[in-house]
Length: 338
Image: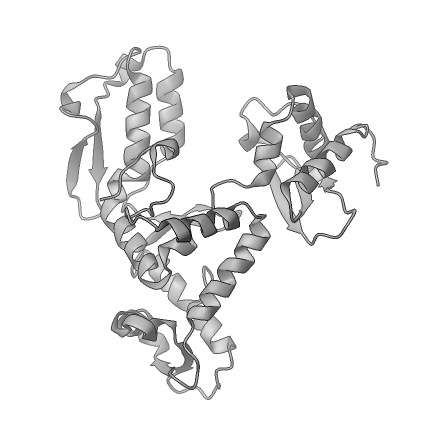
């Protein structure tokens, strides 16, 4: 069972499913985890490539019909067992003469924008995922319902008299078939009213439920499916944040403000926070880090009109820190920095 817990309370040498890694394996992974993201990613790709079965040993020939693509693809993938799931596949559509040298395969199942992926996300067919951010094509497991969760919970924290909302520590799920389900967020939650003294606890409990609790079963199935293909030890090297934010977090407040002015044109964020940043045309334009190729002596480049920082993929944290420190020695006003 997946559980919500602070990262500092987790054993670092355990996978999400609780598998403990041996000391020699863990020590090697710790060394890799300290590398720049680009180096970790290159290592990961090499490990995955080594898992691939040689063509001489096995090659899959997959035939599908465009009209029944989702059913065909699901059946094909479920039939694959063990090492056969790491074999090279060549795809062909019924009635089409294209010979697959890679393009047909990409059309078949490349992430986010091709046929099988679209079918899995289409509410009319499977609807397994909901899009959460169209800017970067982020998806999350579909809970079979729609909510404006962030604004609702923010209002609970900010309203003058939360008791007037008549909330309890209980979540109500309304499914497309009309079925209604009530789930206690804490023991006996449906009998505990939300007021000013406990609304922070309510928001925390509701957030945990919305992110993890209500999608417990499909999320667990997705994690198990991922680990069936990719050994979990290959994923523990990745963290939710990389060196840039560590360096920024260690800066003095005035340097953080200066960096913000460089990248957005203002030393302060809008009242709404980073989500309120806009571009030159007044449209919402989020702060973005754009990784670019590293070369010796190369410094970050800012695009203040678009709130974007082009950040070279420095091979060490020290090089990144030195580059940002040098950038902060410049005058953040004017447009003459080269």
